[in-house]
Length: 231
Image (cartoon, helix red, strand yellow):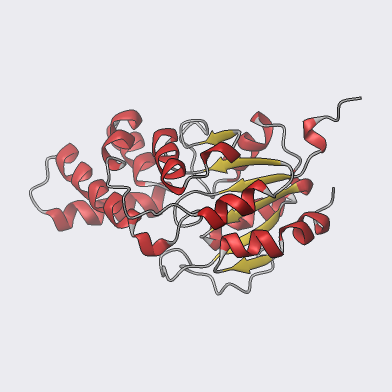
C-alpha cells in the first residue's frame, strides 16, 4: 500500500534571511526599491516622505503592498516585479545546505511573503531548488501576509499539511507565533537584524528551537525535532 503524503513530515521554510544569511543584505535592496515604488506611485518629491508612508503601511497593513492595494488600488503584480528586480549575486551557493536538505526525510516547501519568481531566483543561486515541491507565495495567500493566521491556514489547506507534523523555519519571531498556535514545531533562524526581532526577546514559548546555522541545525537536530513533533 502506498503511504499517503499527508503522513510524511513536512518542512516549511521562509525564504529571505532564512535560507540565506541576512548578511547578504538582499532585503536592503528590496527595501530601497519599495521606497522608490511608493515615491513614484504617489508622485512624491521627497524620498523621506515616501519612506515614512512605506513604513506606515507596513505597520498598519502587514506589508507595504497591502497598504498600497487597500489605499491606492495598486496592482500587486507590478509592485512585486519592481521591488524584486534586484541583484542576487550576493547569495552564494550553499553545498552544506544542499546536502542537509537532501538527507531530510519528508516534504519541503517554501512559505514566503515574496513572489514565486523571487523565490526561484534565490533557490537557484543557493543550488537547492530541486528539494522543494512548491513555493507558497504572497499571491497564493491572496496577498494576506505572514503573520496573519489566515495565511497559515491557506498554506496548510492548499498543501494538505498536518500542523502537528510540520516544522516551520523563519527569521522573524512574530511569524513563528501563528505556526506554533496551529501546532507546528518552530525554529527561529537568528540573524543580526533588529527589525526581524522587533518586539521579541527570543525567549517566547512559541519559539521551540533556535539556530544561527540552518544547514548545521538541519544536519544535527532536525530529526530530533521531527520526532518531537507529534507525528
